[in-house]
Image 1 (tube, rainbow, N blue to C red):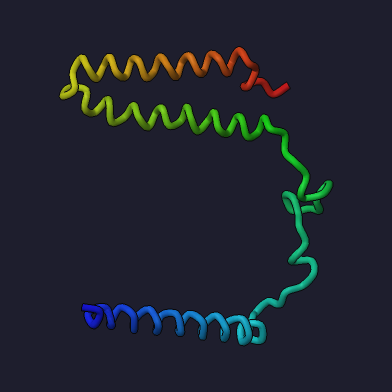
Image 2: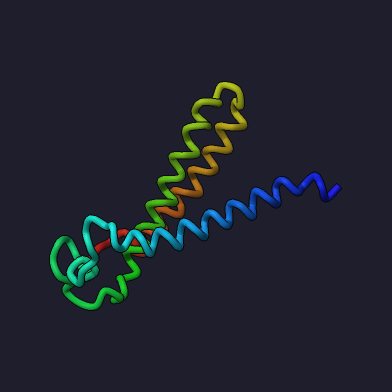
Length: 122
């Protein structure tokens, strides 16, 4: 039974050996034959083409993340609307009610976020 898996084992060993050889040769030889060499200016961090204003590890305001999460949640709502609209003729009134409940829950969540001020930039 294990003899049936021998070709797979040989394939994995050969693939791993080829990967190790290529990675070893690529990093050593590629340094000498590279068209452009690495320099200090190329490795420097930058923002929009010029030097950074401050430390690159500074923390972002949590509002950026909150708006991004809200965008994803309400964008996925549209992804659920397309298949529902295509199959509305087959699912009938039950599908219409289910989508109405789904949209009502999302509207309640949207109003809650609006009232909490999550959509304000000030």
